[in-house]
Image (tube, rainbow, N blue to C red; front, side, top):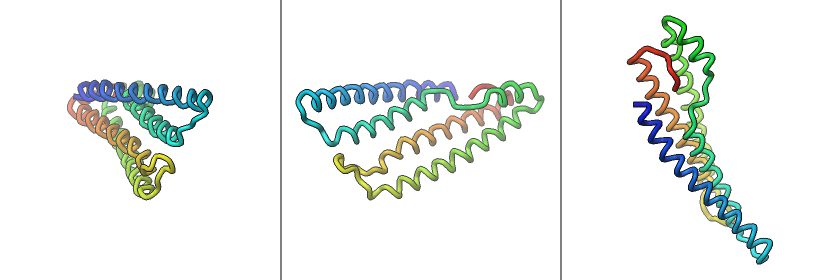
Length: 158
């Protein structure tokens, strides 16, 4: 089940990350050409690029394997008879930390709902949406891995 989830996440968000990267390259090129050749500058371009850059980074984070400590999880926990219990506790700690981060991201989103970019006229809170989505999807990945670990009782890569 976790393999299907990772395949979906990797395929979907890698495509979206590449799309945002392409938009960033094209917009930056257009911005440079119009600024230095035609002497016209788009005031909204910098804010738009910042918005795209944030989404691209978080889509890229979702397509990589989870940041973890393999020495602790694989090399130590898999050698112990009940290492899967320690690994389960590690998953629980990770879920608690991610929950706290999502809660903080939602608070930042709420704090900036009434603040707007000057040229783009959208709420600054939209910058925090990919952060919340990324962490929520990572929580789903850990829950799936936790259920899988509880079923097979064997430590493996997340």
